[in-house]
Length: 376
Ligand SMILES: Cc1ncc(COP(=O)(O)O)c(C=O)c1O
Image 1 (tube, rainbow, N blue to C red):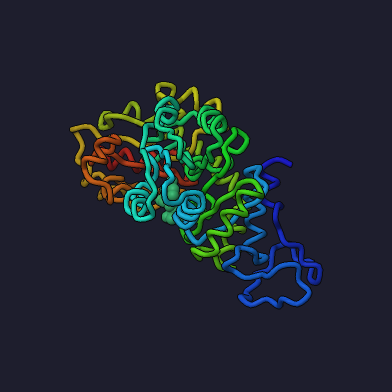
Image 2: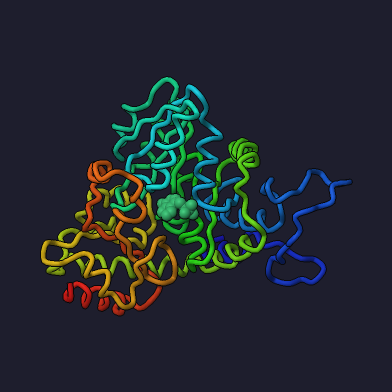
C-alpha cells in the first residue's frame, strides 16, 4: 500500500467487541500477567496504544520494529546510550539539533565515551572513524541550515566496518525520506514536530530492525522515557493526516523559498529544493520532497528583532512542524546552549531565521513575511 493509505490504516488496533474504527485508548498501567506470553507495562514500550502507533511509523519507514518515546531527546539519548559505553567512540555530524549536540558534550565524558564532531561530508565522516567507533549519527536535512548528507555514502562507510548508523529524520519526515531503504540502521524522530503536527504533544520515536530495537528497548526500559496512552492516541490520530499535511507544507515552503530569493531584504536563503543549494542533487537522489523548513538570513537593510515583532500571522515560537507557520532565530532557541564560537563554526549567525511552513495559504504566509520585512 502507498503512504497515504498507510498513514490512515496501518497499526490500528481492531477492537473485536465494538468494531470501532479507531484504536481505543487503553488507560491501564497494570496488566494481568497469568497466561500471558509476556509482561505488558507502559515503561516496557508494549501497551496496545504504544504498539499501534509504533506499527504505523514502522509501516511508513519500512522498519521491522519501533519504540515510541516521551520526547525526541528521550529517543536519541536512549539509542546513543544503548550502543555506547566506556571506551567507545562516536562520530557525529556537527550541525545536528542543538539539544543532541548538547547531550553529547554535556554527558558523554561522564560515561567515558569519546566523540568526534564532523562536517556532513562523507569523506570527513570516514576520516573520523576509529577502531572503537560504535555509532555514526547524522541528520539530513540538518538543523537549521538544511545541509544534506549523502545517506547512502554514510551507510556504505559504516557497513564496511560493522558500525551502527543512526539518523535524525525529523526534518525530512517519513513522507520525504526513508533512510532504512538507503542503508541506515536506526531512524529517529522528534514526534513533537511533524508526526504530532499540531504543536500539542511532546514525543519521539526510534525504528529499526527487530534485533536492534530489542537492544534499544532493554536500555530504554531502564531509562524510562516511554509515552502514555493518551499521548500515543493523539500521535496516532495526527499521523493519519501526516502525508497530506507534509505535502502542503512542502509546497508552501518551496513557494516561500523561491520568493525570498528575490526579496531585497534577504541576504541568503537555505532550502534544499533551490537549484543553487549545495546539497540539491544529493537531496534529489534521496528525498521525495525537499521538506517544509526554509532558513534565511536578513541583510543589513533589515533589523532582525523588528522583523520578528512585525509578523502578524507567523508565530515566533520554539519547535516546528505544526499546521501553523512558526519562525525562530536558532541562535536564541535551538542552538542557545552552544557558545557563540560553536555557533559561528556551524554558520549560525544572529540574523539567521528558520521558518517552519504551516498548511495555511502560501500567499498569506508570504504576504506576512513581506510586510514584516518592509517594516523592519
Ligand atoms: C531535528 C530535531 N531532533 C530532535 C529534537 C528533540 O526533540 P524533542 O524536543 O521532542 O525532545 C528536535 C527538537 O527541536 C529537533 O528539531
